[in-house]
Image (tube, rainbow, N blue to C red; front, side):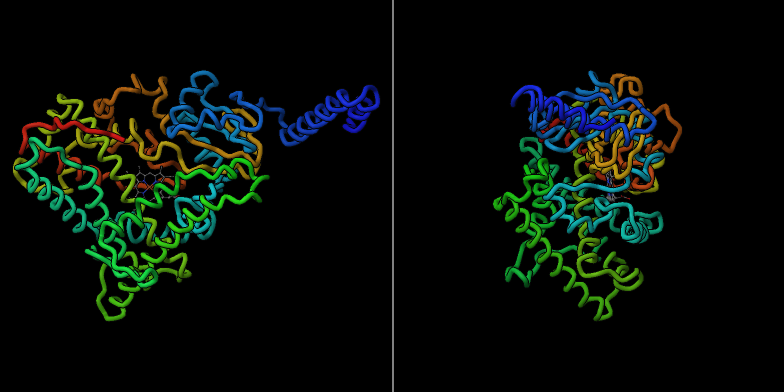
Length: 486
Ligand code: HEM
C-alpha cells in the first residue's frame, strides 16, 4: 500500500485540523507498516502498560524500587509486558521460564547492554565483565576473573583469606560483647570492612591502613579509600540523567550531573593507580603474592592501562556490595524469626560444638545453606539484572520483541511468582530443605543465568552469617537486636 496516497487526500479536503489528523494517521500507518515488516510471522504484540504522552511510564518508576512496581504490573498485564521510559521501549520479564528463555535460549539476540550515562562513565564505557557486551573482550576478562578469583582452583588458593575473614569477624564481635547488651551493633560496618579486606587481599595481596594518592596529593585513611572505591560509585550508579530517557535531547547540557559522576571517576582512577603503582613496585622488587594483580601482570594476555585498572576494581565493588547486602538481610530475617534462629544455632552447635568455623563443615549444614538461598530468593541483592539490549528482532514468550528494545529481567518478580513459590512473601528457608543438595542456583537466578551466571560465591556469605549467629547466640543468648534495614 502506498502511504503517501492515504495521507494526501486528508490534507486536500479540509484545512489544518484535517491536515493534522492526516499527519498523525500517516505516522501511525508508517509505524504500523514498519512493525509489520519487522514482525514477519505476525506474532502477537506484547501487552502494554499504559503511560502518559512523552514520559510513558517514567512517573510511576520514580521511586527507588522499580522492581516492586514491575511485579505489581505483572499481576495485571501478565509476566511479560512492554513499557515506555520516555522515548525508549522496554520489555519487562517477571517469570522464571521467560527469564531463562531470555538469558539462555535467546541469548544471541540479547547479549548486549545499553548503559545509562552514569554507568557508561563509571564502567569506563563497558570495560568490566558485568557490564560489557558478550564479545571477545568480555570472554578474555571473564576468563581472567574466573582463573584468578572466582573459579574452583582460585577459590582454593584464596581459602586462607576467607578463613581469616571468619576469624576476624568472630573476634571483632567478641571484642564488642561487653557493650552489646545495651548498645546497637552496626553489623553493616563490620561486614563491609571484612569484605573490603578480603577484596583487597584477593586483588592486591594485602590490606591497607592508608594510601598516599599521588595524583590527588593526599594520604587517604582506609575508610576514605573505601568511600572512593565502593560507596561513591555505588551511589553514582543509580544517579539518573534525564537525557537517558530522551536521547534526542542529549545536546542539552546537564553539567551538574556530569561533573558529579566525572569527579567520582577521577578520584577512583587516582586511588586505583596509587594501589597499582605501590603493588607493581612490590612485584618488581621480587615479592610475589597470590593476587589478581600478580596474575594479570605475569600470566594473562596483556591489558591496556584502563583495562587493567577496571579489571582490578571490578571484584572490589562486586564483593563489597552483593555479599554484604545478602548477609545483612539474612541476619535481619534471623532476628525476626526466633524459631528459625534456634534451628540454625542448633545445627551450628551439632556440627562444630566449640570448634573453629571452617569451610569443610559448611556441607554438613543444610539449614545454613537453606537460609542463604532463601535470603537470595526473598531479597536478591541484584533485583533487576543489569539491563540488556535486544539488538535483533526476537521472540519471547511467543511475543514479537523488536530490535532496539531494552530488556529488564526482574529477578525479584520471578522470585515472587505465586505459581512457583508458595507464599512467596514469606521468608521460609524450609522450602529449600526438601531439595536434593546441591541446591540449584538457577532456581532463584540470584547469580544470573546462562553464560553470565557467576558461580561459587555462596561460601563467603555463609561464613559471615555463621560467625555472627554463633557469636550472638553464645554471648547474648539470642539475636534480638532492632535492625534498621535501609
Ligand atoms: C551474593 C553475592 C553475589 C550475587 C547475588 C551476584 C549476582 C550477580 C548477578 C545477578 C549478575 C548478573 C548476571 C547477568 O548479567 O546475567 C552478576 C554478574 C557478575 N558478578 Fe556477581 N554476584 C555476587 C557476588 C559477586 C562477587 C563477590 C564477584 C567477584 C568477586 C562477582 C562477580 C561477577 C561478575 C564477574 C559478573 C559478570 C558475569 C558475566 O557477565 O559473565 N559477583 N552477579
